[in-house]
Amino acid sequence: MTSFQPAAVPGEPPPADSVRPRDSTPQAPTSVARLNDTIRGFVQTWGSVWVEGEITAWNQRGGNVFGRLKDLATDATISFRIWSSTRERLPGDLKVGDHVIACVKADYFVKNGDFSFSVSAMRHVGLGDQLERLERLRVQLRSEGLFDPSRKKPLPFLPHLIGLITGENSDAEKDVHRNAELRWPQVKFVTKYAAVQGERCVPETIAALKALDAAPDIDVIIIARGGGDPQTLLGFSDERLVRAVAAASTPVVSAIGHENDHPLLDDVADRRASTPTDAAKRVVPDVAEQRALVAQLRARLTSRLTQRLTHDIAQLEQLRSRPVLRTPDTLLTARAHEVELLAARGRDRVDRALQTHDRRTAELRATLRALSPASTLARGYAIAHLADGVIVRDAAQAPASTPVVVTVGRGSFAAHSDGEVSEGRVPPHAAGPGEDGASPAPN
Image (tube, rainbow, N blue to C red; front, top):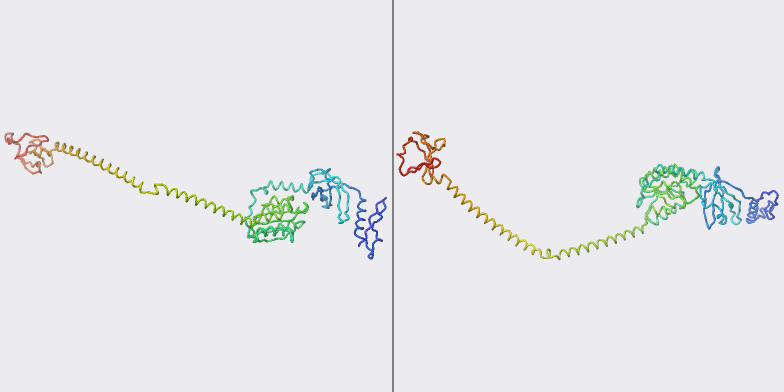
């Protein structure tokens, strides 16, 4: 065991039971407890000091606070404790990222050799530089529309192949695999390992993202990391990584840290998961839940079909029971009788109309016959026509040797005129000239 000689404090004697070089040899080493007591005695001689820095971790357990304070210039950090009795006197809005000054006193715990600082006072100086830079970047990316819900891609219902970016042999990888396989045993992964903190985090994560995004079989990509203080999660708020995720064509799920961790990657990813376990639940459906859902849907479908068939059968029976369908010939017989009555009535009306028109036609025919020249010719008169069809009305129209056509009651015959004769030569039984130039034909 290496000997330990505490530095002498001016004006104070060293502790009576402190470890000195001569007190420990290979043959007679000192105990761990005595060494820790010596260190504690040395630390307790230090007084309280005021320090300035940025809170990078703030965890509350049982009313006490355990955190870390980072130097703004060199990134050096210290661990601190705030006991519950002191916490009540401090501002209530202290949180990660705050720029503060604190009154701290060194403390060494002999049981486990843990070195820390107890805080007796703490107050705000301003927003930590890191948080301020991140907030400015967050505002810029939001103004560019990278956080808009409309640009986020939906996750596939059942991905055939999942891309996973995480640290090698990390708890996050185990959590994602275990919970995904419990939910869907046939799930498959393509895992790309990358540093999850430090300078290699951003370039390795971007390279893994581009490789998985270029693979045609990858349906969704999960970027997973376990919890940590904001200092270790800074890589997942890097602008280069955030823009690479926004440009990816494959849906990306961010599963960084725990519920309270919120890097910029969460805002630009297509889906945020509070933990790697939550990411597995969001990406992979639960086979038991899906089977139960299918069984429920099948039962509902069977019930609906049964109800529909029962309803349709009842309606069909109701329709079949109606008189018109039970004895359809009754309706046809009644309509046939109506058709016969209408047909008989129509025939009767047609017969009466025909009789009336027949009588009218006979009367018109008799009237026409009485007025026709044919009736005059039938009484023995004749009509003489010249060759051009002109009716002879004057004897001068037919001088001697003039050919004429004589029309009588039955037919016509040709004749030649002997010229005009005196009235005395007309047979005594012949009547005078009739209407239309008709003369009584000679017997």
